[in-house]
Picture 1 (spheres, rainbow, N blue to C red):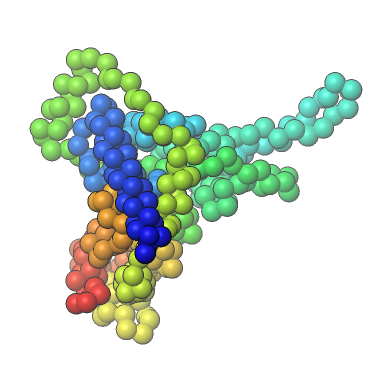
Picture 2: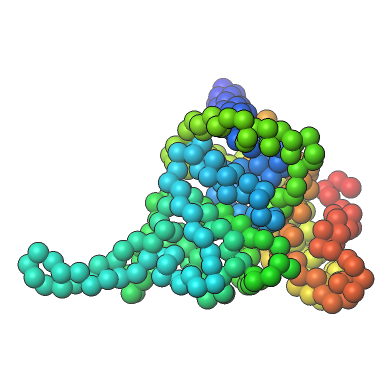
Length: 337
């Protein structure tokens, strides 16, 4: 009995530490970021879960500033890569060059590219062709790159936070489905309400912003990842996450009719995995040592919106991905319903 009590007290202490850490992060970010609470929460959930994040929004919405500020708070090495039409894969991963050693012999020397950092901001990732976009695939999945047959591992933790402008803007290349699936969330950032925009204008035109204070280290982030994976989740909730992802796939047994009509491609297994991982982090943020239904439901849009491809019929009828996901939530019953 005493062992169970000690374990419970230790878990509660960890939960409170993470919840207190979240409040401190919000306080630091408020120095430079106004509003966007939902965006910040989803980015932090991805960071605490160890997942990559895609941020979609028009130019001028402080996407770069937000990512840079988060890297500063966690005292992580940050690199920004500006994706352009002429960017080559070697410009990201690095390349081998021929160097002359002190003894006069020449040898190939690997020069690391900007991907060798803890936090990578892949800025406007959809402005570069698919060949260069694919240079990030191995990095995102394996946390390494292979050049000349040699593997070069990254220092942990490693996150890719990519921004993209809306696809309908001129000069963009849609990301391949295989790469989209590597992102835990697709976070949509929109224009602020008028009062928040007024606050931003006043803040940025009157004085310099206060410097961001580092609150954590890379070791802290790795410890957070271990804590998150120990959070218990009921089997019924895991099945709920799996069923939500499976119900988005057209042509499968039990798929809702509206999915077969409107969707060309649905979410894979990673969607369910990320739903459960993200729900664990959200539960800790809320001060709970276990996952609840609302934790999963709160993250369904961010997890599925880049994994569901709507078809021509949906486009002709004016149906959006967001509407499909909302109806999916209404159709798949949660545990106990």
